[in-house]
Structures are given as structure tokens and as C-alpha cells.
Length: 125
Image 1 (cartoon, rainbow, N blue to C red):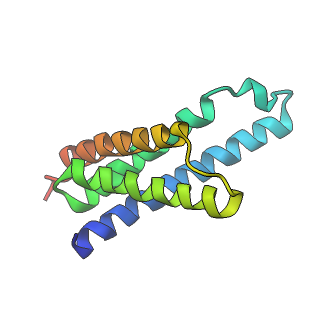
Image 2 (spheres, rainbow, N blue to C red; image 1 turned 45 degrees about the vertical axis):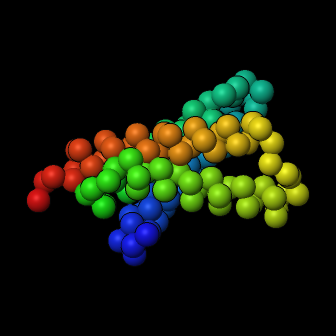
């Protein structure tokens, strides 16, 4: 694994974190300023997370300009490992089948984003 790949994966992770933080800010404002409750959100936080990871995959693929599936999947893997570490170390949760399934979906979504990022932005130069 080259330094160029790790740099591209880092760009993708940072893009995902920025989008997730912006979405979290919007959701927090909606919860605070409206009568909306957390129970009413349902699966929307998960969907927003997948969208953020897809955008992160696009960023990583556009940065590396080749091997979109690999760099996208690497970005999703690193993101999932980071989240698993937070859950394990910070919240004392062991890995469950649900968390592993979400991690696998993260890898697939960022892989697709990486493919799109290479195909949209990789061949411009």
C-alpha cells in the first residue's frame, strides 16, 4: 500500500467526516428547534451516513485517479475500523453482527463512490 493510496483514503475519510458533521448539525438543529423527536428520525441517520461515505469514496477516487474500487473500499475499511475502535474503546461495546453488516455496507458504498470518483474526475488531466 503506497503513501499515495493512504493520502487519498485520508482525503475520503475527512470528506466523509465533514459531511457527517454538517448533517449532524442540521439534525440537531431540527431536533432542538422543532417538535421533531429522535424516534421520528428512524433510519435517516444511517442513510445520511451512507451518503456521506459515498461522497468520501468519490473524493478518494478523484484524488487517486485510478483503482476506484480499491481506494474506495480502503476508505470504507479504515472508516469502519475507526468507528469500531470508538465503539469498543469509548463505549465498551463488542462487535455485533449488526455492526459488522453496517461496516460491510460502508465498504461497498465507499467502493462504489471510489469508482464514480475515478470515472468522473480521474481522467480530466
